Image (cartoon, rainbow, N blue to C red; front, side):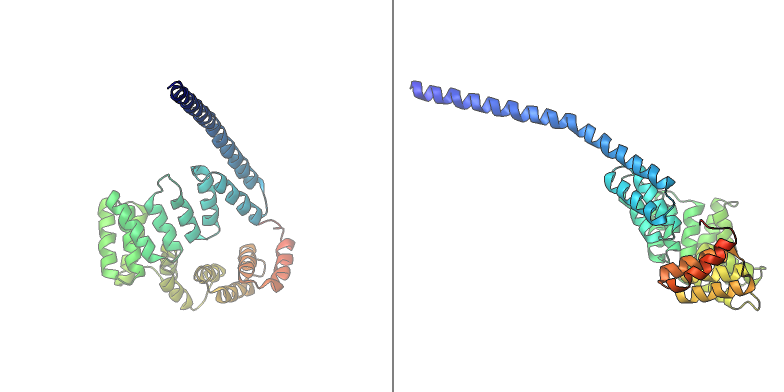
Length: 287
């Protein structure tokens, strides 16, 4: 009887000790967790600062990627990386990075990125979602652009009219209205002006077609054609367009910069040194 009582007391003592140990460990972990989070965010901030001062684009991307890994729950780190993708024209990556954060991002903004990425289906989903959340001239204009891209011009004009009713002076509604006039045959603008409006809206195929039909093309026309062709993955055609621009103006810094970037992307690095030398001689060594 005494032995059983002793065993019970020992069991109780061991259980009590175990509870105390677990509670103490939990308390220590609870104290340590905020310190770990603070360290992660501090390290992410340092990487972002380093990225802002780095001159090499690949180094900037690497630093921001590290910051995003350290701070997956840190909106600034994700937004910095997404903005870097956006500036580089990598719109699909920008969208997925923006959406990976816990902070809600404006769906109208993401819809615009999807159009730049030539992803009309995703743009339609995002603009539809934005329109359900809160109808606006921007969401209706976005839906208009998506329909124009898909060739549904009558439906595009309906959305453009709705955008105008919601906000007559909105730049987005004015753009949608102008594009409706282009497709309905009521535009008084010339072919070049129409092409630039369409390109700015992301209606690339028709814009490229109109630019190609111009009897004479300026350096700016060739550069716009190259940007559209590059966005569509036609890097060879983009290179040819920029070479045509250089034939008109061999000293165009903007053209040389674009050409070097596209040659890098296409892997045609053999000619880069020639164009870089020309660019350097014009006094633009960093770009």
